[in-house]
Length: 292
Image (cartoon, rainbow, N blue to C red; front, side):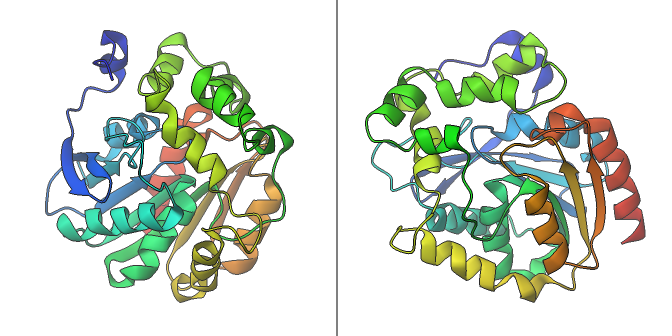
């Protein structure tokens, strides 16, 4: 992909580093003191580490803030023949945690980052100290929005998602309540500037396991079954109630599974919580970190 545009670099000034994982070179931000408590932020689809920029800026003086781009996303390699399955992304995140020897982790997740992040946390539970959940799932659901389901139609999905960038482009106006500034839209879309570079955007949609015969169904079920092992960890749930994909019904499931969680749900926030309400997220996160 081309270098990031100058006005995107103004919002995302960090250079990052690369780690060899399954699929190629994985890009990640690694900011802050190396011996500080870790904040590990895991993005979803179709975002990348740019989505977490407010947390990098807010916490990199007091925490080691690590923000990977999944293979196929952001500034990571975008191999055309990699399987792009949930299990592979989980393996890669575990590799990041172990290679960087991350400990005392506050795990912050969004969208696909929920399944990937919790899948990794269940593999290295002794390294996880706190959980922060924002508009995501790490369990099976029978519900899929029609617009996302349409992107799974053979032929049409490739044309819409990879040809016209319909998924990532639509997300810049369907996932927030407040209108995104042009430079933020440009930042969210910058890594996905060609057919080849949009491969993960489509593969994530195709990898939603709706039926038991799906290749990732057993992986997601295993992650769901393992959630109880993390139930005693402090959890903060920050939810945008106007999310048409991860609706308040998903928040309710998290609350049932983690009844001790601290919960803040906002009626004027949608799916991209970090774009609609970064100041509120940071305020609630400050208090949560202080108490736990």
